[in-house]
Length: 281
Image (cartoon, rainbow, N blue to C red):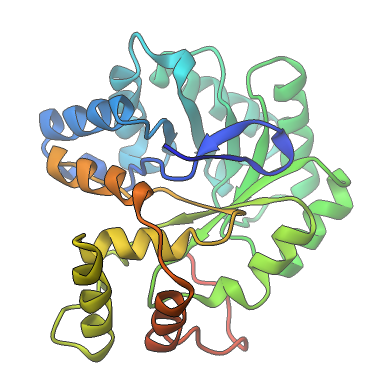
């Protein structure tokens, strides 16, 4: 699996990882097996959150990591309502317990919330000093909010920004992605298959996607993952709760699109205008 430097951390992380949003709704045995197969295939960037199933998914991830924790780049998130100074510290302890580990490789604020960012950042810094997290970042932050974090923490502290990014949702390419690249912040795209909005072969954009896939003998989803991670600052965390889907995701790492194919896909999937808010899912 291709590895890339994860923002300001200096740590190399697989370009493709495993997301776990809504995994509490899936068959538990199948989801557990999918996570374990993913780890065997090199999808060792595993993302979860205290919000997912209100702790249930963190417990599932913890079970999947038994015996292989040291080989995994593990990420979880604190809910904004919990993100006071003391609340962040306590939330992290609860996540560590559910995940059966003594540290997170990255800890994120799930989205901008009601509490002062200074409190959350101060808690992140303390957790890092104590060795309970190795880095910290944010999720669903637009440029104005990223600027606020930078002003509070200073350069080189913010590891990543995790955002919605799929073929029909390329808003981040206008401002968020360039900002992150300028400041050495990794971009992690979640829901890369659109959470139910994946292009069908009968649609105009879906036909282009299918044509590119046929030319390489791969699936349209593999083409989507290759396209979305074409910039070295970007990582993707597709969710899969069945082993076949996990294997399909992992195989996308071997695909290399030509400049012409990238241009066709960029034209087919309009990146849309800049004048709107960053979506939060």
